[in-house]
Length: 100
Image (tube, one colour):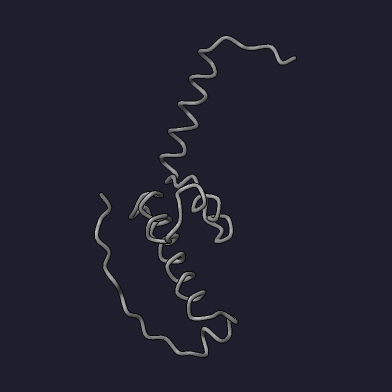
């Protein structure tokens, strides 16, 4: 069962949209994507929720993040350090596999 949707109304100067050479529909779609990307980047929502907000599937959303210079890997510096340390520990503890 899907969740109900709500609608938001936004006023903007028409020249902003015209400067971007976008139709009303294209501009609305881009605003939804921008909101989804920013909320995801800030860690406020998951990639799945962001994709739903943007009106796309999760894989397409994640693949599109590069266009906005947002990493798929949404780690804080501390989380990234922990991940690297754990990966190093696993690598040191596992037998080496020869590369052919």
